[in-house]
Image (cartoon, rainbow, N blue to C red; front, top):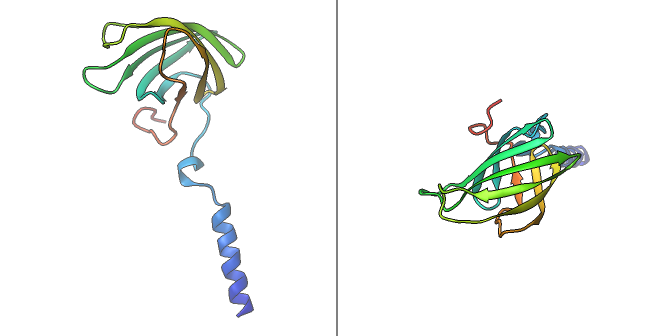
Length: 133
């Protein structure tokens, strides 16, 4: 009975140490280029060319509530730039934005003007439709 309890405890320890399968295959991409999700419900198509960072973002609804563009400059883990809504969406705003690059799959807004809604932009690692390997 002692051996059975030891094996049971060992099994629990092994299972609790195993990584969650949703995160087991996640890897940070080598560049910022990709399709990101925003915590505002939007999809953001991001491209970095040298130190310049560009994006087109839009809400998922039809017709889109918002659609915007961003152009910024990356300096280390900080991106600073300008954003503006475009006529595809119903909102009309513009301003400046600063983002912190947590890694190439996770951006966090640290400052904004003009009322931009999203504050986190990330590549969901399980999202093979938007980001095929």
